Image (cartoon, rainbow, N blue to C red; front, side):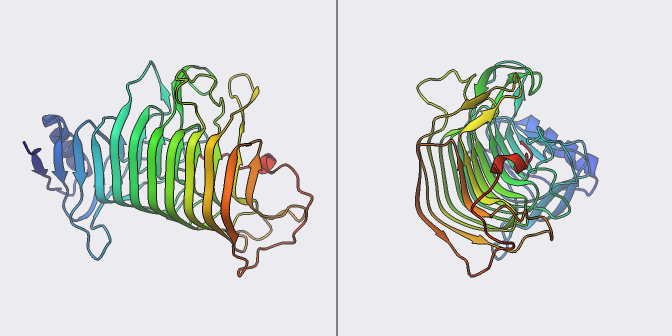
Length: 358
């Protein structure tokens, strides 16, 4: 039995269009909802429940022809996926200006799957596909573009193009708690995640993976970014993780990345240590079967004049307490000379590590 198909016509009124979209999504338990070509404003974000495929009009010459934006600055994602078996495809997003703060990585995005903090134990969101999606936020770098957080698994993100923003794709653990300083657990760690054919430009960072396992990233092109990508253990590493059969930090691969970065520090950071927001203790996560291979790094001139430290060299890769991570076939293209002198003595790279938007 084929799933039902629905077509939505927008009126140009942000409130009426958002209400029509919500009513249609609430009127059935899944199906395919097709949006027309054009650029449409909603007065706030929309929650996407289980079983839905949200599709834009057929692309033209490879570019999406359906664009969604929001007139709200409250930090709601334009689309917040809170159900399983969901597909988002052939849609462009123009997120509004938003400054959610260091711990608001799931806020102000084009798409967020899951949550960072939960009031009680959560059910897993699974079988989500995001494909042939474009995101543009050229006016600021305070909020992420796509967030995958907390109790999410079996996620595929493919053929996504992002311009601007803080982090292109932010993948972060989540947990039960009222805030980052009062987490009680359990914690949830995204896994069985595939990211491929990702393009990010003019952003603070291409992507990061924080406290995850079973993740594969393939064929990414990150250009004019301050940082290419980071592999992180998370603030509390795995202290609240309850599934011993699937250790956090295991079976992660990044391959086929091209990173042209213009920041003062590094193209890639792999860190095994994390400082808890609860008691400020430092814990080290043991990585298992983690590899970064077949990657090319191009140091560009610094984005901001004077932002470099004359006592600090710019490193393609910084590894901090992350034994067990394998680096293979790493190339540095110096045809574009890095700005500033090179020195061997460098202070701890983490001391000036931007927090980003977690």
